[in-house]
Image 1 (spheres, rainbow, N blue to C red):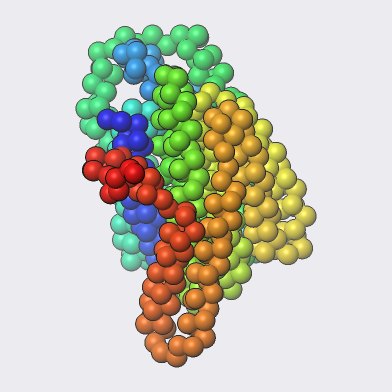
Image 2 (cartoon, helix red, strand yellow; image 1 turned 135 degrees about the horizontal axis):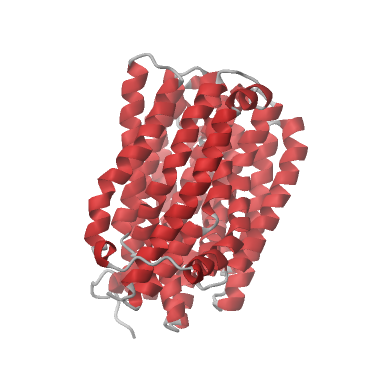
Length: 501
């Protein structure tokens, strides 16, 4: 299979499963938002964010090391190194998880009282600590699938987890368990899902049973040498993703946490395209770089730059136009106060989509330190802004901090990609994409002003008409060319649409 076909197939698989997982994830949030009080909803996600922050001290960049080295070992048919890599990563992460889980359980009451300001958090802390203990089991299976470039299984793990959580949450809430329902559901999901995927893992890697088991210091050092520089980058990612919620929990009430925890994930829907591309580009860029096929990588990156922007802009702009409607549909009228936060973050996702992909490619070509420094610097900037803005402006301050952080990441990672991969940043194409997006917004605004009818019919007509205008402008402005369409058809094994002159 050509690299173009492999990249496209992997991207489509992960994108489809990511969308399905996001849909199920929002069903979970919808069920919780309607089945819990706003304070209970905020409490669960506040404690969940607390444990997400602790993931930093457990992972040590080893999950990314699995994705990095498994393709290289597989290329050499070095099955023993693959097995011992997985054993080493699982053992290290489990040992650390035991220590962290024990400490949080012992001091659960104190954490609940002094940080979350409610003793109701104690039970949630204790059960999520057990969930934290089980997470390495799923991680080692999931990231091995990514390393083997079995993207269907890689994406399927997350999809199955959220499906199990949805079913359990729905059932447990119906029995009147309240705040206990999501906690127990998440705990059980991290038991059930890894067990379901063990047979698929063994089918893809039957040598796990027969390969020699010999964990060496040399291998562990190799994994840590790659992974530890990524810890700072992971620290940066976690700072950007979770510390805003934690700081809001400390300075404001659980009601504000609840509002932020509906606005932020909703806006981040736009990022799933970037996550899908990034998950494919990490192992693929590693393989292309190792084989010296840098020109293939450059071409792929430049096409990705252009088309990721084209795909993301209309989705993000829809969120800018209809924030309150989206939040009302998903979570009910109690949460429409979060509309401005969602608008700010939706605009920011346009920039972070490409920045996130850039960072994964830098890691894939063996330069994780470059990505680490960028993420860490941007995250520290975000943390400082959060500490300044959140106490004064609450969730609006958190959203502004995140937006500025994402812009910084895009600019700095694009500079590095240009330097190492020689992939130029299509600034002019991006500017034209924004121009097309501007007309997309203008058409929706005008039709919303002129039309007076059922909101759903109005929405369908305005978005449909705006989409046609957007597509027409994309071709008129030369953002999609005949060569691009021919490349796409070639990638999926079809004949070109246009003959070269």
